[in-house]
Image (cartoon, rainbow, N blue to C red):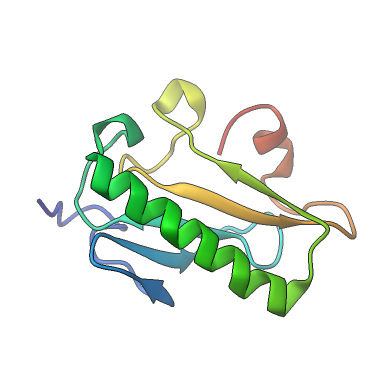
Length: 118
């Protein structure tokens, strides 16, 4: 299912993908390299993904990490999934944040993420 009003249903900037998911740069990164892994099927909640879709997403999380290692050599990572507006989900299409950490202070929405949003 595709929601024509959803920015993740026709994503731009896809740099890694498999049959069920894609990886794109976050439009409002809190750090350089902040990436989103999104399922290709439009579902609002991570809990609505099939086991195969969830596995495909996490396969890309690992691939994104490998790419970020080579480009940024971060000291660590934040991996986050916000489910529902109360948890800070702003786009109602399931997605996983992969954020390389280390070095200077986070930018942008970091305070929001530290408090559980984003």
